[in-house]
Length: 147
Image 1 (cartoon, helix red, strand yellow):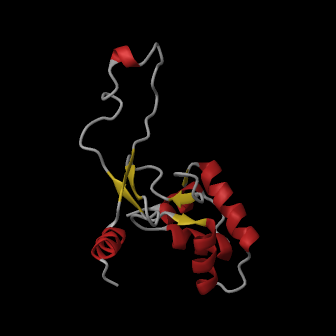
Image 2 (cartoon, rainbow, N blue to C red):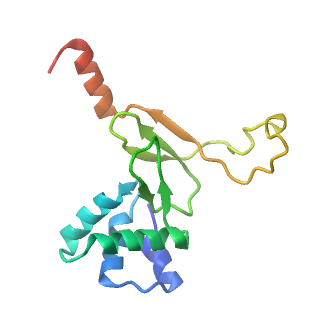
């Protein structure tokens, strides 16, 4: 589970009502909302929150290193609060659903020395693509001709 609110409090980041609501929306495990999804959820908690406040706060959280901006396959940017927990992503190629996954091994070690071309590798991003259960079930229904 994300500990975003705790981290922000420890940093002394001023938690206005708008910032607190945005952080609460982002707090949790497997959270990868778009800015519009963050805004919709924030409005449900604080009806007067503006879209600009959401976008500005997300930008600040990314700049602080407390939220990761994730973009896959030209889809809308998503915001991941698990910035301090090493993980990779599993993405549905149908609906874009995203889950955090933790690799058993060190992905930096997976790249052989002779494939580094003199680079000093400092970071690696691995993204797995597949079909989520809902999209996979839809694929099966379409293939069988069932509605």
